[in-house]
Image (cartoon, rainbow, N blue to C red; front, top):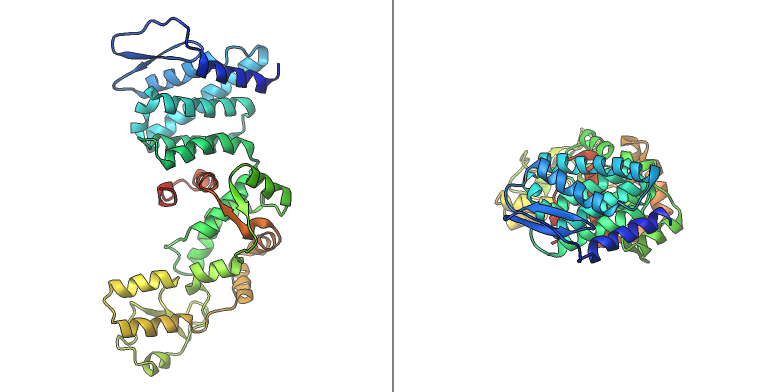
Length: 365
């Protein structure tokens, strides 16, 4: 019997075996998983959570033999320890989920997939997804998406995972901390560069992502220059003379809250904002009159670079952006729309590398 068949049979054993005898304590709940597992109802410690998790795995992998059994056992203990440590660090309350059947099954999925292939990067990704799943107390859309993501991620290669991360980053996020070309380059280095070497133009790869339920290839696309020109417009302005403020009779005048030296030409000025959305919120928060708001928004568009100029500037900031533009423009990336599962996996893949990242609930709720 193949290893995969054994795992599938073990999984069925976990779900269907209801006839075994069990002895449990007065304040415990018994769960069948090919053997007896006692789940403490209160005060689950990290050691107890680890023991419960390993009991699940041992009860379901018992049919493996020889070296395969030994390898699976080592991997299961490794990934289980990683889960416990991650929960202790990021969400200690999640340890109490060890007594929850739904969480146990999600954990079993992680153990099963890591025991099967031992891929370190995949293991890290699954752990992040599982910890996010532990934060969900009820069966809502986010919990369902994370459960599905745990089953889907192992079907994908590093190339697929990189594509999901980059598409999610460019099409669904905006970094509000970018203030100049230096911080913009640092942002790209941290969030994008780790994935660049893994990106591919291969059509079949995106078809597989579509088949796996991570997204769909559409007809109309989003150019990379257009995306950056919208989300980070303030980085790509040629600037204007101070006389423009006077000629347009902007009553706030040369106010440093709204105007700064142009990032691309220090002899000129530009509006202090990265995007129209951010600018509109800032003007409203500062109590600027409707008349001035309209005039400042017009100035924001004055001297905006064309898409070829934006591409040239981005490559000047970070030369590896030339490769990113090439792949984006000549692959289904620009027309690919993510599903909730694709977002969850892309989000987790970024979070796996950079640590802290905005909550997935921002996009899926």
